[in-house]
Length: 105
Length: 475
Image 1: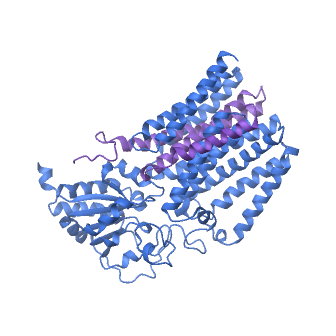
Image 2: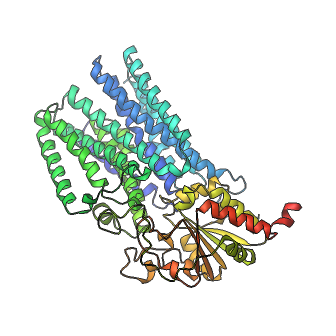
Image 3: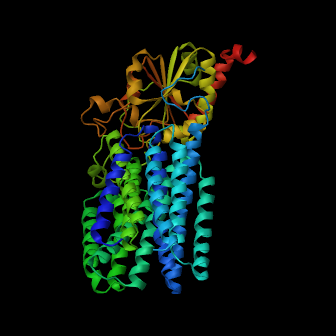
């Protein structure tokens, strides 16, 4: 990142993308979506890793980075797995994953 | 530019693309599960891209391995062990840890790498402030949902606003002082004030509004990640954080709309039902109800046996009693008897929007039988029997008619228009939000007192005694 203005552009466009991406969500998916978005926010792992990489042998910094990595990964791993567990329940019915089609029972 | 760096950039771009596609796919039933996998893949790619670009020392590897082992295993363990009913507090816990991660990164940079320039200082301040609020707020939310923390009486008074404003001012002063001495007392003051502020704003909010708070905190953790992106100069982190922050805001808004509450009201209005913390969980307050009809499981079974169309309204009480499987058993019996069965799902049924769908899907209820509020409301007049299971506020007709009710204006399931309504409830205690329910006093309503699971088992037994479902079972 060469400059602040570029970083701010990235921030702005990223926010707009977020608003657009999930404009309409069926209530069924609110909880899994929240959980999935929460897992994505664990992307802080990148910052934690960067901290470790830049530590240059500073043990305190390595320790902080490692602790931060553990917290972030807990969020990522747990978040994605829990979301998958929830969504697996919806897709278990093999016949019609489409919401508009009707199975005859 | 080396090949490794160019490759790293390409991987970063691919990761952003997949993250966006993942988030988009998560909003559709058909693609949600694969989209979740896609997002997880993108996360892995992003990490790979970063590691490719940087030379790694053995020491760095060691610390990365330690952090990965601890965080990864803990996440794996928790994700597999939590019951579906505990989903809201689990998301809160994960979310708080994400905030903590951003906080620690900012602390590391401020303490050991120094802060040069205003932008760096602002990034660190935001990362610490939002990270700490996300962490402490999420843990309080989790504690409240688990029932570990109540709503203390003093938090309902005006004093809390003064306290929170004071904390915010302290945080602001510390933030302004931070660039002078980034590793000094102002940093710790900022951490402390932000953490306390997270507690201070979450504690007064009643349990019924907690899903909105978790959703908002989820948005914050995105903001915290984006701020951490500024701190370590990672465009990928900024994009992903901003995306989650924006998406979380939208989801929060959707939930507020469903509950007919404004976000400001949720955040600053205190617990619903007002005064003295008598809000969450309800109590044995049976005063104020007259004309209550109660009936036995047997009478209820007779009504079900002759009904052509039955609608179940599941609420959180059903999930607490772990009765969704028994409910499915009852529904199967009725279907075998030729009854049309569906489930009315209020947008905020359970404790989070969509939570009830997850719980019922776990019990193998066909997806098509779950009908959303707007689709099922017109069908209630031609419904013979409605059975309300552990739901309360979402079927309260006062929300339509009584302008003095705190629920007034909230969209509800219009079960009062059905021919007969049975409400399965432990007692006449107030609901989650502590509001009286006019439905209980209507002439077509009968209360079936008892634990949801026990009552449903009783109904299954009674229906079997009546011979319902025998023909199919024998064939």
